[in-house]
Structure formats: C-alpha cells, structure tokens
Image (cartoon, rainbow, N blue to C red):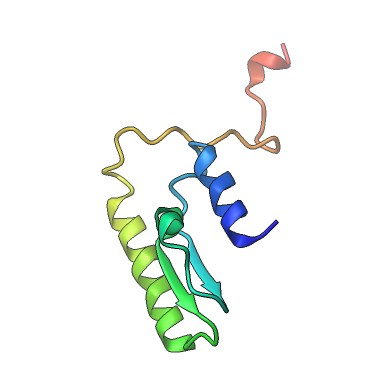
Length: 88
C-alpha cells in the first residue's frame, strides 16, 4: 500500500478521518488527491520545516478539538475496563 492508498483508507473511516496527515514523497503530489493530506513535503525533507508543520497541526488540533461538533466519539478500546453491571 502506498501513501495515497493509506490516506484514502483513513478518510473512509469517520473516526480516523480527522487525523492530520503530513505526506512526504520523492515525487510531485497529484493535484486531484491533495485533499487527502494536510501538508505535503518533497524529499529530501527539511527537518525544521517538518517539525514546524507537525507542531502547527498539533496546536490546531488541540485548540479546535472542543469545537468539532459532528466528530464521532472515539472507538472504544478493547482494553477498557468493563462496567460492573457485566460482572453481576
């Protein structure tokens, strides 16, 4: 699976579609697929620019996380403790 296919799968699942994606490639990005990622860097990647991009995406996600109205609840973890009503 290449990076574009991975991004398409992420966007397919509502619980994963909000994950910010930074794509890196040795090739130019296809124009018709640019909505699949938040930022694109051509290789070789400038590490300072990549660090700045990730910091920016994280800050935007943290400050706006309370404003997402239609975002689905995160999927329950299979490792989460079960409520006591299951043990009665």
